[in-house]
Image (cartoon, rainbow, N blue to C red; front, side, top):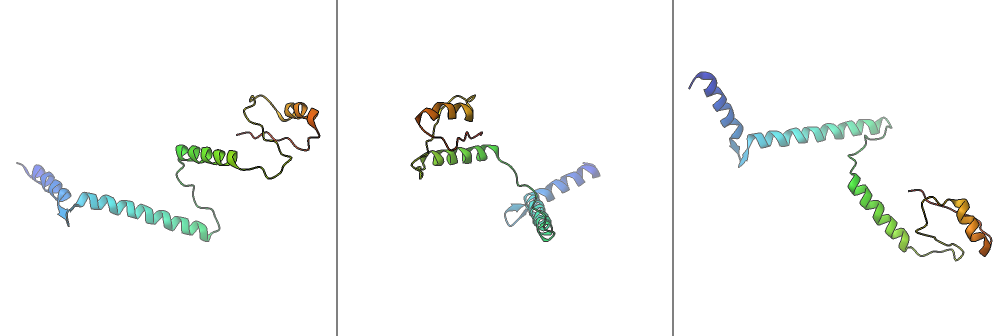
Length: 118
């Protein structure tokens, strides 16, 4: 075994050596993550001190869609407080506020029509 091979072997043994049952390489990775987290916290604090908003957090599309579905279900289950409000669902997507107003005007005065665009 030549010198270079001995050095590589020694480096690998050092990398895999245990400190309190944890490999040094794992400890190094944990330290790097902690350093990154600390840098991010410091950067956020500086931005807050300057009156700037924090950088955007990671966006999770699946989580956001789940939240929106949950909110839609909650909205559907809410009781209508105003007895003169009519909630219409499941109409064609190409229906607009003018079309709904024309349909419902024959039953009485319409003060407001709103078609949510999600």
